[in-house]
Image (cartoon, rainbow, N blue to C red; front, side, top):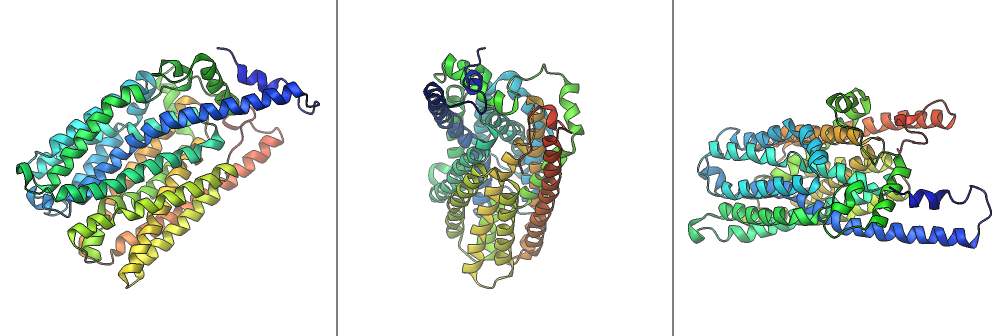
Length: 480
């Protein structure tokens, strides 16, 4: 494959006089890259946002349904059955994270994502017609299996297409699409709940029917909509030509030199678990999803039981905090990419979350507590984009990216397991356990980021002095 991009970049030696032709070449390259990024944004970020939102839609449907008759109808209101139904989804998903992420590379994004998305939709549709909590458990296991590769697979695919300085804003686009769909899903669920009794189905059943049908349609469209990895971009349906593919490959190769994966073998994959950074990144996602799960699954319950709102108001008022989250995630991600700042942005978001949960847990006024949900929601969603770009900016190698994506998503899921139990109904209206665990988790995130920043700073200093090669890649430097 030709390397037109490297030729343009290296054509003029550093410090040489700038000629008219060199300026024209640089101007042409800027235009080519801008056009390429726009194409990738429109194709990849749009479908990736929709696919990721399906997982959030699941949490949105089950949380909205939890304040309808579903818990009683399926006997999920006895003991911890509702929490177990949430937990079992995560357990099934976590167990298959690594093989599912590897499968994205082996099968290709088009086949992989189309199949699992259609399967997810079909299972969701079937959930509308179950009659017991045991059947719900089975459906949740199957959903977890189908969704195991979505987050890590898309994180791997997105990080393969963009330079490190472009990543956080693209993960922010992903988050914006997710939260908009999730927030809109809450409003749609309100409307679907009003169909209670129509066609012999209850309101919560209509929620599952609607989401299942929509997901099946998206799954079929995914085969033609999603794009392949950069080196196979020409195999995508009406996407890049050969010249554009060369530019796409060359710009990533210049940034970190890992476009083409080494031959697959389990030793080649598993050796990356020896890098302590993988566990540090995974720990931050575990701590983050403690809050994410607590809010996404239980926000209507918090509004209903903790703040005394009616069922319909609880469903409706769970949507606005997610619409608001679009603002902080875009602003913080733009700042993070422009100034190559990751740690300070993550720490600021964490402090905002601490403030939000403080308002939610320690204020006596319902309005102040509700505003606290805005701060907390905006902060954790912003940090999802920031932490993804943080880990993706500080590793190289396709299989290491796969391992890290699987590890952080697995621990993200394990955080969800813990998060499904920290909101206890018998602690309404204060939910003391959830408040203190959420605050403590983000203080720990700040501590981990601080430790990483010190390590990255020292490593970069040694690299500058020629004493260290970072990530076995010449010229590679950590971003902190």
